[in-house]
Each structure stands twice: as C-alpha cells, then as structure tokens.
Length: 256
Length: 44
Image (cartoon, rainbow over all chains, first blue to last red; front, top):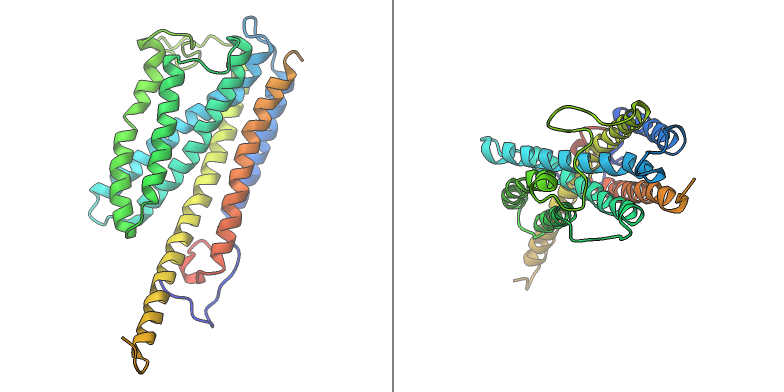
C-alpha cells in the first residue's frame, strides 16, 4: 500500500463498480418480488395461518447466515493453508462474517416475532433458539477478535483460527431440532427423506426469498470486502505518516 | 390480514436492518476512499 501524494489521483467513488450496480439492481428487484409474493400472492397456511409469511424472510436469512459463516471458514482455511497467506482471503472471511452476523441477527428478530404469534412468547430457551443465539454471539466475538490490533497478518491468523472453530457450531444448530426435539419445528424443505411438505406457491415464495437474499449477500460482501481494502490502506497510510512525522521531528536541531 | 403488525413488522425489521447496515458501510467506504490512492482500488 502506498501513501497518496498530493498529485495522486483520488476518486471518491467508494466501493461501487458497474458489476456491483447491476448486482444491486437485481437484488432490489428480488426484494420487490419477495415482498409481493410474501405479503400478497402466497396463501395463508392451514396451521400457521398468516404468520407463515414471516417464514419467507426468516428462513432465507438463516440459510444465508449459515452460508456466510461457511464462506468465512473456507476463506480462513485458504488464508492459513496456502503458502501466499494472501490478505484477500482474510478480507473475504471478515466481510462474509460481518454480513452473516447481520443475517443471523435478522433471523433471531424475525424468529421472535413469529414465536410470539405461534408460541405466545418472544423467547424461550428451546435448543434451536439457544444454539442460534450462541452462534450469533460467537461471530460477534469473531468480529471483536478482528479488531484487537496488531499487523494485518496477525489479525488474519488469529481470526482464521476462531473462524475454523466457530463453523463447527453450524451442524449443532441445524440438527438441534432433531437432537433435542423441543419446541422449534423440524425442517420443512431440507428434510432427510427429500419430501417437501409445502404448497407450490409457498415454496415458490420461499425460493424467491432465497434468491433475493443471496443477491443481497453477494452485493454486501463485495462492498464490505472492498471497504476492508480501503480500511487497511488508510491504516497503513496513517502509520507511515506517523513514522514520517516522527523522523522529521527527530531530524530537527535538538530533536531526539 | 390477521396479525398484520407482526408480519409487516418482520419485513420492516429485515429490510430496515439490511438497509441501515448498507448505508453505514457505504458511507464509511466513501469517506475512506478520499484518503486512499486510486492505485489501491483495483475495482475503479
């Protein structure tokens, strides 16, 4: 990374490019479809009645949070085990984890609203809810570890180790409904017997939600990864500037 | 729609959180972009 001298080109375009603008447009269209199908076109469920509409945002956000944490672990492994130890993988891991925490937070909030309608309470210490909350806190901790300081390589090494441990919680969360058989229902779509127990239009609405959330995830991760490039460059710039100021100070008569 | 407050509220929470996160991230990135040379922004 280099210090930008006064005559260097600096644009304020941020993290956008033609590809991200196209992706962002597709994501907005996907969200509009999701709102239309989720709130208007899909029918009410026989058992859950109107509250099934919350599922079209709750389930995709949970799946995308899982995906985000798996991408974080994959990128962390590529950082640790490839000889180059490229920070590209570290930044992808950090960006994906942060977006994953956002989706996991949404999963918890929308789950609480659905729980109030279906169970009569916002929260209960059910196995799925408890393990999901634990997964959320684990990745908040991962993001805190990334901010501990040190060089970029030190940050990448220690956060990669946390990511490879944190991802082991995902099977525990996913299978918690079968291991403990508490209040939370079992999967309706990703069933071991492959039998999807959903009305066609409901399933379509869920797929629309999954596509819209995937587009949002990719768009957010690209922007966040680029923002991390900028953060690292600005930090390097600040450090080099401080060293340069210190050297200039020491070179003055009477300087130490 | 029965329980409209909870149902619409869940969509507002979902897209409100994502929107707020995206705006905060893009605003910070734009501010940082002013301090970093274009050669360090391969996407530009």
